[in-house]
Every structure is written in structure tokens, then in C-alpha cells.
Image 1 (tube, rainbow, N blue to C red):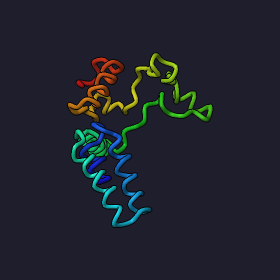
Image 2 (tube, one colour; image 1 turned 135 degrees about the vertical axis):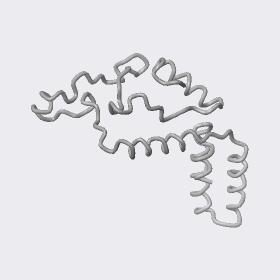
Image 3 (cartoon, helix red, strand yellow; image 1 turned 180 degrees about the horizontal axis):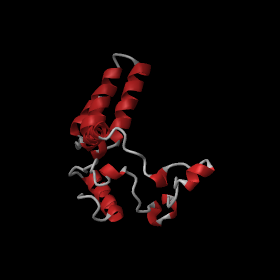
Length: 146
């Protein structure tokens, strides 16, 4: 049930993962035969929950990008600059702390140069991810094709 909640329900209903995990722990504490009631409630909740595999697909895309570009460097502005040499080399230069931006967001690149336009997460068509899609579109404008 935990895998079903994460892989098949995912961001369509993130509470499903919490409930599945609580079911697992509750059954360990309560035991059987009463544990069957907890499992039945959780199974019904999961079965009737909206579904989305977008989180699963996103991690698969991310893994593939890492395999394709195993040595892609972290952008300089994201690198920590604890030494004078690193500061002089441009580490951390032009980094903007997102929480200082409007709505705690600042448009800046976080991906290595080779994959700046890679779309890793694609929201599925469900009410929860529609909100996520709207939030992403507002912030990233036309960078991604959400």
C-alpha cells in the first residue's frame, strides 16, 4: 500500500502516502485480527483516491539525465564559496536567496548548462496537480511547457 500511495497516487493526493505509512505502523502496533480493519480502510481510501504517476516519472527522468550527463557541473552561482580562491573563481556569484523574492521565489537557473531546458516533472491532470501546474507556470513563465 505504501508503494501504491507513492507510485500510483502520488501528487494527486499526497496524504495517501501518510495514510499508508500510518496503516503500516498501526497494524504493527495493533496486530491481527483488528489490523484488518485498518488495512481495509486504507485499501479503500487508496483505491478510491485520484491517481498520478508524475513523481515516479520525474525520478525516472532525473535518473536518466544523470546517466546521460554524469559529469554535468553544478552552476557556479549555486556553489558554496568558503575560500578566497573559490570566491575569485565565481563560486556563489549572482546567487539570489529565493526567500527574498516575491512569493519566496526568484527566477534563476538551478540545472547544469547541458540540461537547462530539461523538463523533469510534468503535472498530471487532477485537481491537486492543476494547482501545482498553475503555481509553476506563474513562477517559471514560459521556461517549461507545463
